[in-house]
Length: 457
Image (tube, rainbow, N blue to C red; front, side, top):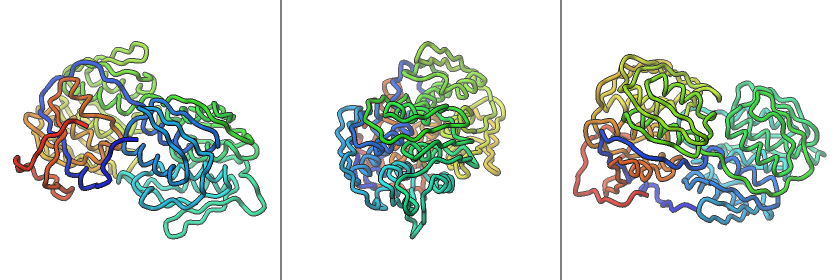
């Protein structure tokens, strides 16, 4: 599916060498949305007919999800960015912990497996260390649909209540608009008996993409993208062909990088209204935005400080909080960034301060005093989006930077350094014999004779 070493130390020994203060210029082809593709893979378990997914990004997270499906007996055939998924001969069994540990999206399989087969057993999931992200909403919702659920030694075991052959429709009100819970419950409700109403549902574009594919498969889902979603259960779902929506987070990351370097680029294909909150903040901070069809162009200018507060869609996405903070470190004036979604999503603050930024953090609120320039460093990204933030900061810095933690970056950005290279950035993926750890990320020296350049992956 995607060529990735199974040896984690190999990935951790890779880094990006970035020469700062270059200008981006040109067009960026945006890949399919990771967060959409992952849940669509889980949704393929709802039918015994073939699902064809187009525009699937080549990412390590997608590979992990593919391995989870294969472990269940799903047949996968991949060609370029297309996946053909055959879930006809599934073997219901507990998924190995080592498969699900690094991928939170693995838990999305529980709703599909439970409603199709009447049982599911999945270890508690893993992923980036950005907060608790509890699964209470998933479990409470599945119980409302008629499931018996126990958690035994960190394994969630679900089955239909005694003498029932199907889940049954229910009115479910989520305590918070959890994206994962909304997706899990939509999938579970598709084959339930009767009508399910989910209130305070998440509205993210990835949920709308899921509902669109499920309706192609024969589901009856109404009002996706609204706070109340209605699902009428059906007897069976069939196969379909579906194209994954463009990745709004990848598009936003490149637009922020252009703003940070006073550059002019175009990102395409995108769905502009998926980026509205981000585009508004980029304009407010001094950039000029031009929308034409499925493309967005940006012309970076002097950066003005602006405040942001993350929020569920259509608010400012938490996944772009770290990249936007990198932009604000070199803005004129003072700004405030408030993280409301994940309690541990400020791992990048100390790293950016190592590069010369001026950020103070209290209670998930970052107060930033803009500086003129950052300095190049050797640093380790601690999660997916903090890695992207470090790269953006490195693009603006006065000297060379070495960014480690690519095992995080490769989870969510397809050919990130190749795309930056095509825009005129001097960036190369390298491998070193010495493995730098997260505990000594601040070490800014490398033995150059241990570094061997390789082509950008």
